[in-house]
Length: 150
Image (tube, rainbow, N blue to C red; front, side, top):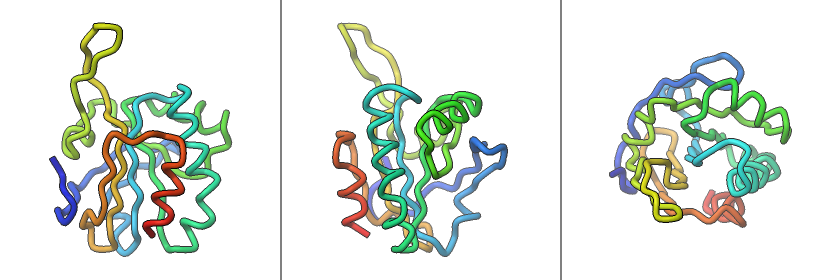
């Protein structure tokens, strides 16, 4: 499991705009990498819209926001368009990045066990080191807490 002070695992994943984004591409910038369970669900939509609204302040601090979920690129395109999201969404369909960050967890709902993303956010510095980790995030007010950390 990735801890504060650890080097962030490198990644290269498809984005909603057809490009591929890697951590190496972002060197020299602070990165807010947030993992969420599923496009267009209530909590994930709330969190994404709060990051959307906070993005001007985040960019003023020299940081970028990147959302990651196991959804497909097509799903991300629809989600992004529906809520006018202004940052990239990466498709981690094989959940390799979620596993590398330790956020792919066994969950339980209505007595049924399944594997999925534990909502988490990582602030990665210009050199690729995790400076802050938020785990088991509650969507409401989270973007503000992340922005305040910048």
